[in-house]
Length: 288
Image 1 (cartoon, rainbow, N blue to C red):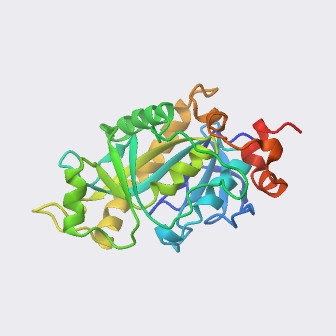
Image 2 (image 1 turned 180 degrees about the horizontal axis):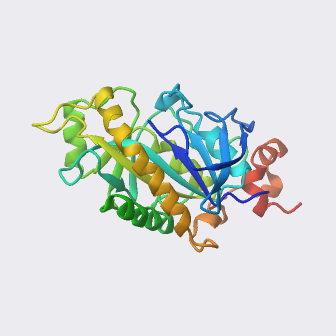
């Protein structure tokens, strides 16, 4: 299996990765169907990079329609070990204004009805998720953002809402009262699935608006988001390029051994169908 040094999941406005020397384009079949779109694999700054547009090219998928399990499983099949998630977010604090970039380290899940695990149907695992973002990869991302735009909010909390409608003012004020920093619609279940797949994960959040809480700014709209994203997309691409040049070699974080602390089921007694379905995730734990 090839090793992909960094997989990039591009959100609204980021549908390609210029400068990538393309090796192949592929759309692997997984037990969960096909990913959102073709995954482009190539070389960038001497490292192997994969790029996946989360919503599909042309932005065809609502946040709730994204095949998160297929996306993550496909990246695992292709040999990805680190994933950076780039997405548009609304600011819930005066510290972050449109065109700023945040690198959150916490997530609050307010989604519902989205399949959020690969496990079940014969194999039980409970992954540790107190720190949903890889600290090593987050640090690399924060340094890259600082180099590209001059400043970054490192840390803070991303609240993930269901969507597709934006927040009511009451909801926005509630999230502010909780101390949330940014709001988006796609970090969950992406982060949970990537943790189960034993890959490193971090968020690069492009601020496009003030959600609905700000007294002197207009409430968020699609036109507003797209206007700021057009300006910020090049920054996102430059951040990825900088991250790639600064990636450490061997991983020393705990992300790569998550399942050693999470599996409950004795795999020797698990149904063959479940083992076969999850074999790419369980390979290190199977005694053939």
